[in-house]
Amino acid sequence: MSVRAISSAVDLVKAPLLYKGKVRELYDLGEHYLIVVTDRISAFDYVLEPAVPEKGNVLNRLAAFWFEQTAAIEPNHVVHTDVEKLGDLVTDPSLLKDRIMVTKKAERIDIECVVRGYITGGGWRQYQQSGSINGITLPQGMKKNERFAAPIFTPAAKNDVGHDEDISFDRMKELVGEELAHELQVKSLQLYTFAHAYCEQRGIILADCKFEFGLIDGKVILIDELFTPDSARFWAKENYALNIEIDSMDKEPVRTYLANSDWDKNSVPDPLPAEVVAETTRRYQDIYRRLTE
Image 1 (tube, rainbow, N blue to C red):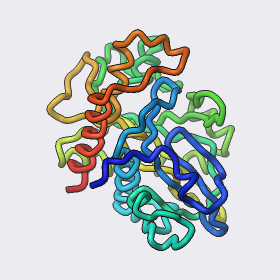
Image 2 (cartoon, helix red, strand yellow):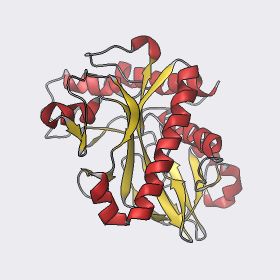
Image 3 (cartoon, rainbow, N blue to C red):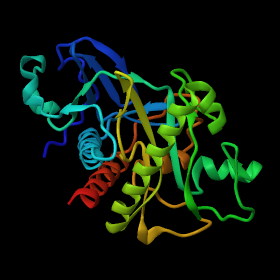
Image 4 (cartoon, rainbow, N blue to C red):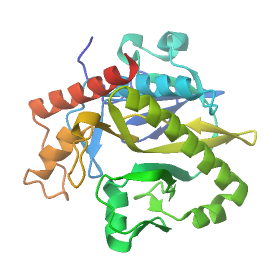
């Protein structure tokens, strides 16, 4: 397997670039979109150097795996993931193997659908301040990382500039309409319940996750990515405990390194050490192996 990191596909794809995110690039193929998942890595709102080898193809293969696993629950935007089908639109198919996804064009619903099965991360911080998460009042005395009696749906309004905004379900209904809000809530909880059970069989806890949905001819479909380390919080079952900071199975080595460095978080950080990059690659490969093999 190649260890070359791909920071951008702009010079490899002969199609208009519509959008360049922190990790993904979106190209216009006419009838469809082309999503290329690069090896770029971000933390604390900065894209870091160097890119992390294999990260992009792990994210793309894992998303494709989950889209296939959940297609019976919810239709999705995937057309295919075969770079060879792109022909001369790609100058070097070997460099983009396993990191492309051709998708249907959907109208994005500007809500990030978040499901939490455990009280941790931003949900824990909200609870400490108010005893609630996104307007949902929770029992007193909950412990950090404790599992909810049932998963909770905590949406956010998507902002193209700045951070997404946590909102109540009532506010979501105002934004997208009551019928669509309920449909997205039900589908999100169904998807989480399915994936949580699947992960549990493989010694992994799916703590929380986020979904994006779109509309094609008025019908809801899943878009973007699904149950990847960039859109879900995975814990190794053997590491689970209450009242601690659980080491999640993602880019945690990068976050830990930066948190323990003298970086001020207000300027571009120095390049990541080689050992941090290598450990991050290993983490992404490990979660893929544990979920799919």
